[in-house]
Image (tube, rainbow, N blue to C red; front, side, top):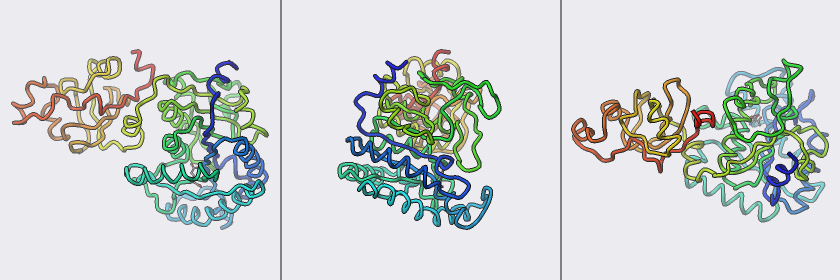
Length: 383
Ligand code: GLU
């Protein structure tokens, strides 16, 4: 076990650290003692030559405290206003804390649409890389004030997973209010056991992670495991660890058995496919039969009209679409060669019939394998 850790965590230089609101906030808004403690650790890493990028929540929680509000706030504009109130303070606290170590910070606020736009994506990448070269600590949060549903990451676990991809992190550490991932919800089951190592994210692992959240954070354990899936698919190891434990970062980087380690995929997904799978938002669904499922997942083949049993949504040529099996389980995301209306006409047919039905044939495949990113769980891959 220790050997796997040491091996996985050797040669690490660029670390993305995500800290959730449940770690950063106490009864009285931001917990300055915890922030100082974590900043001391991150500064220590930076001084040792690690490149540290931070994704942090806490804006809404801090704004809520400033406004004297108790309990969760439901209305979107109010949440956005609280983020605007709290973000400045959050940055000031971090900037003062890093300042004690003579380290400068930079604020970066992102929405999902910044990443789906290739130009903006590249700008962000270049900015982050300049900051890292200068040894500045980039502090990233969702731009809550402008993010409405369609352009929202939803939670900072997802945001951190996307940033890990952008900066090509060598390791992601998600600091949470618990010890790591348990086999059952530890708040409900006393005998729940901490899982120290996840070699593959199977359905069983996904099921172990419930959606329960604290009243402060938004993610819950499930979103952390889904984030782990995105990150490990890119070939980056992922650790969920206890953010309040003193020396947690040092402990992880020296190979101690802290938190839950998710091993990276041995054959990382190509960056374009990762982008198709995890950054683009699918515009519809294509339900496929067992034969097509096997061809896609086990044999790495393209999706042909013959394997399609149903189509949901309206989408055009080139749009990202989610492939699901008959039970509704998500298997893959790909860019389609035909629009939804055309696919409805040719589904279930041999490719040789496409021209006869549509009057033209641009492609044999509905989704070419080069444009298809498989995301089905390992358990599906074996079935
Ligand atoms: N962006 C939100 C904030 O800073 C938090 C989102 C999350 O906790 O996932 O308050």
